[in-house]
Length: 160
Image (cartoon, rainbow, N blue to C red):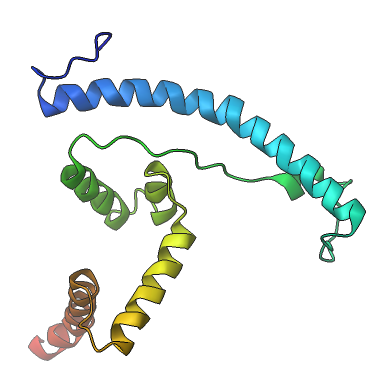
């Protein structure tokens, strides 16, 4: 691990080594970079409110009464390096489908904002439809799966 020479290492060993380092760096990033970014955002927000650049919505507590609540944010940062992208995507899908994770968490691991990804997927899907192109395979497969899942209770009722 110290030499970072992965030429003679199996996938599992390389992944374990990278994950060990990743946990260390993620902890540091959350503690140091996350706090610094939150403080900077809080100062920026306070100045923007004072100067009238931003109008705060009506709330039970003002910015100065609940500064940490108003400034609370999740800082995503750079994504983790994928050793075998296919396996890692399959793992992420399995965690989401098993209810052990969310799109937000899995995309944050990749260094992405899930809301940006979802908005872009909608835009691209609408552009494909307006251009007369077929749906991407992942949308078609999901749609077909939902149809088959919705018919299962009907089939079960007919059988009894």
